[in-house]
Structures are given as structure tokens and as C-alpha cells.
Length: 76
Image (cartoon, rainbow, N blue to C red; front, side, top):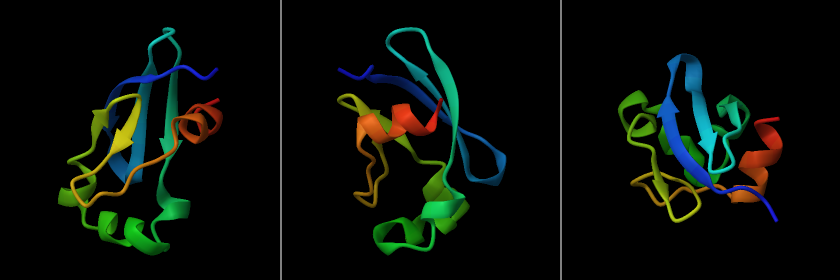
């Protein structure tokens, strides 16, 4: 079982600061994903900054989201 995302804060250079419900913290670099599919719209900084926690993971208004297990793995 993976920890759920509790808080996400957009930072400079397409980095997300992520806090999990087990108290762990990490940084997720989104740059490698920005050239693919629905994530291309997040190159717009305003769109990127509208990230939010939905259920146990990260989501944007565009409908882009990330698997919570992926988020946890990449934040290690």
C-alpha cells in the first residue's frame, strides 16, 4: 500500500513539493512529462500552478493526473 498525497505545492521550474499522509515529503520534477499527451498543457505556468490534491493523488484542471504510486515512487 502506498501513502496518499496530502498536500501539493507548485514550485519554480516545474517542481511539485509533495507531502504524504504518512508524514513523508518529497519533490517531483514534472519536466520529463511535459512533452507527452495531456501534460503538454502544463507547460503553461498558470495551468501548472493550478495543481490540487484529489482523493489520494495530484490532479490539474485539464484533467491531467498522476497515479499515486508513481508520485510516491518519484518523490523518494
